[in-house]
Image (tube, rainbow, N blue to C red):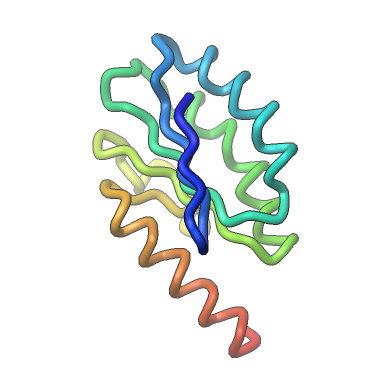
Length: 110
């Protein structure tokens, strides 16, 4: 797992060989970063199913309740397979844009 801390978010990228290995490492790291906006970049080389990606739904809901953002980046995911409020983008730049838009929405009270 690679972690890159920026001013407005933390980017966590997978470098593990399997999804379960990455997810277990992420759970440990996420506890330390409960107050940060998180972007998770899952490598397209990791063979992950809809069920695997769905494991992040609970974490995304918790982040939203805490007033922070959570965005999953993977270009092979079909976003129509997930709830509309689950932020999934194909690129990191789009994930950053989502975080910025959500920050504006929170400032405006939405």
